[in-house]
Length: 633
Ligand SMILES: Nc1ncnc2c1ncn2[C@@H]1O[C@H](COP(=O)(O)OP(=O)(O)OP(=O)(O)O)[C@@H](O)[C@H]1O
Image (cartoon, rainbow, N blue to C red; front, side, top):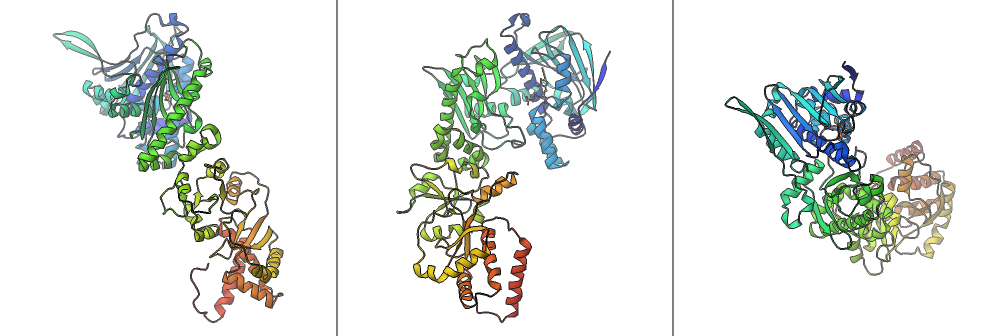
């Protein structure tokens, strides 16, 4: 008796999109189904390592693609692991495929428009892509360690049926009852083309099974269509760039070729082979997916793990590829393999090669490197905190915008060091939202005047990794907005004397700060805020507060520029009429402009507007002044 069950809500939504729309990329259903069949064979090969008898002698691994024009069906059949009844319910009734979840997220972001539908081809939606070409799908499956076979059927309209069936061979048959407009997928030539295009490097034979009738005699032919070389086992000199690209695309579903290919065989004490790729860009949906890290681990061509994270540190998770070692034991559990010391050796070797490749790319193909960096730089930077042994190598790979680089161009730490003028004793940096706003910050004025460059750290992660950057090649890194980082330039005694009363008055009016003082940091602005070396930088504070964390308040230092006309005028007014009520308002305005200049929020915006509007009112009522220098903010 067939039992009818309902799909989970998320899946109903997906199936609705698939069955009610037209696609330009629907041919990818074949790639998805062949890839599932290949996974199933890998799984049974692995599970049977310790139970070879369960295979009952059937180790002729094959994925069969069978078009049947009379019935209008296309069957993809494998002798893989198969599924139990419970597994069918779990796997074919819910959204399992990670790409599918990313696709649904992308749909949400893109709205319901056709733009989102175009995304399907790039994501692939796993098993459910079948409904792009079929109005009914039947799955007949039997697990390798069971005698019970199950038949699953659905038209993709919200429910599916399950019933027991006969299936003498283990494995899974996916039978697609093709839609009328999808009969092209019955044509042998079209199927050959698609198998070669998308599944050429599947390691098991993908066999096209054709039934022909000659002189009334039916004949079945089987033709292996894919190349199925374990490309990583071949010598580098024997593999063409095109083969690498095709393999990479088949492995990752990326539509673009990789930025770099890394292919080598370690020989000597340990032997293993690595074929890894540095992608050129983040594939669609990369930021919505759960982060995945690791290379495919093979032992003598048997796939042991889809993502072996022991061979790749998390900060290199953008690297894709394969590692194969015949030295690892085949007949042990995945957990035991994960603990094998050879994996640490492999990791060290992969990390070194990837970092060396990135360094080479940076020096030889800078434009290509910039694109890579814009996509994956934030991830790579995590390594500064996590991989102390390679900290210097990673620091060498960083790119920065800076005070002296034209907008949109980048500088490395090494280039910064090389152009440091004599007398400069530290590498200066400033944390903030964007290079554009930092370029206008009062904190860089003195540096600009002295010809010192300031690195702009504007990636959100910079706020957390800057402590790991210093020292770089013996030079310390100092924040340009720290109280003691001022290149030099003492305020004269005479100025100190003259402004002493004003400074003390402003301190009384701005209890939020620990100190008010004069400084030479500013050449154009009237005031700015700095902090001592133990305080949390304001940009980091803003980020942490946005993340909902409480940061204990630090008292900061308000610095005034005694040469600024506004500060000078204030001093004069204070000397002339120390009781003038406007003085208190002006003192607050100096503090408030220092906050605005560094991007910090104002504690009392209405008060600020009132003070500013009062100034406008008064000023507008007085006669027009002589034009003043436009450069003084
Ligand atoms: N031919 C098959 N043999 C055995 N199990 C299968 C087969 N096809 C699908 N399945 C099971 O159904 C599940 C769902 O398949 P689907 O293609 O939607 O996602 P997926 O392959 O798990 O996704 P991902 O590629 O992200 O791992 C698979 O994980 C697998 O357990």
